[in-house]
View 1 (cartoon, rainbow, N blue to C red):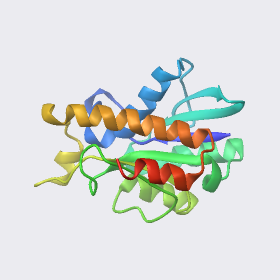
View 2: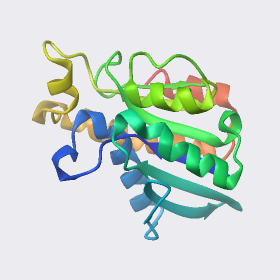
View 3: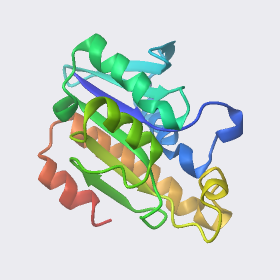
Length: 186
């Protein structure tokens, strides 16, 4: 079983913001995989799909970004999952240019509060798909809670599609080195 988590903040106010790119990737996966069984549970919105004989859970924590780990730990404990092998977290990264992806097996939070929360519950060994949102010129909070510009939309759409394909490759147990080689260069 795999748990694919997209990080973001709940509510219409935060839809389509840079910080909610993880939610956007989960929404795209749900659409592509015809998943319609999303429900409220584990302090989040969770859905599931059997893919190639394996149950896959898709989670959008509804705890607000800084408490994302609270929702994820509930799912991990309920299903007795191993974060190192079963968890994939998709989130925004200011250190990457808009449209770029990075797949990492472990590491620090890089200053991302959602990742800090997850690390505080589970340690730092879990797979991540980092989605580039660019660097702010001024206020970081206003930047991450703002929307992408019209000129960035094409790159953002491609990034969401590529992050979704990357998640599917992970679900299908393609060797992680090959996945990193494929997506970290795009």
